[in-house]
Length: 111
Image (cartoon, rainbow, N blue to C red; front, side, top):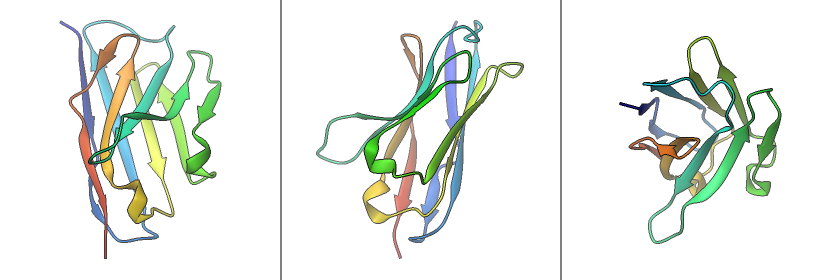
């Protein structure tokens, strides 16, 4: 059974940092693109960042260089380092690999 489990979310003040992790199990995703999406209240789910099996990355324009996606194929995991967080980054963050989704982790940016 394939599972994607996110962790690392929480409450952080504006300007702070968080590192999200997504651990995959049940199959290898080394050859597949892995990605982070987010969904804020009342808004559609949107792509935040993606990384191919070869390490090529893509980011949403709204990220403006503040986030970094990385992966560890040996651990079947993907990460999202988020710096200079803003209140508008508040959302549930989801990990996606191939057609599989994690359950999400809440990120709240507030003073």
